[in-house]
Image 1 (cartoon, rainbow, N blue to C red):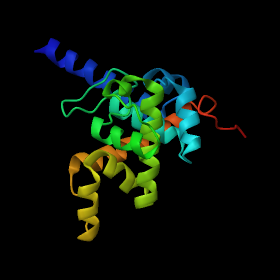
Image 2: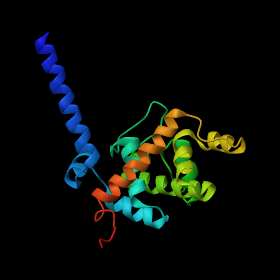
Image 3: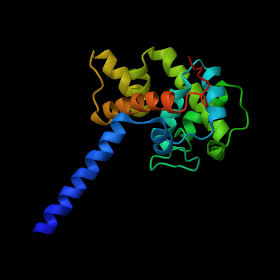
Length: 184
């Protein structure tokens, strides 16, 4: 019994220390915990679409942890977890004439299409929270909630929005120079 008590105590102290480090988050720790890959594509395509590069990086981290080979059970593919039908629509609207589903595994194409999609959600909704809600739960759900004058209705989507907004701050702080922010 005494061993169990000490084991629980050690685990509790370790968990508390981890939470403290996470809450204070020194930059070196954030850079290890929240990696950034494909920063040039993130920076270029975000700026091209008038988006915050840290937001694009945050969406990528939340969707795929920067794994370009990610595929969800719902069929979403790549870094920004785009469905083939959404990506095909983006390809058509942006002048692409030879889109193939496997293109979504290409980091540059996935980030370009995902940034285009985020930009168009901003044009439609104007609010970062609604944009992220639509990215997660779909435009149909967000349109219905707005028409009914209700806030986000899915707890999973509320958590997604909060998590991406938190990650956006983390990426802006930890990876500022890599994402093209000027210091000072």
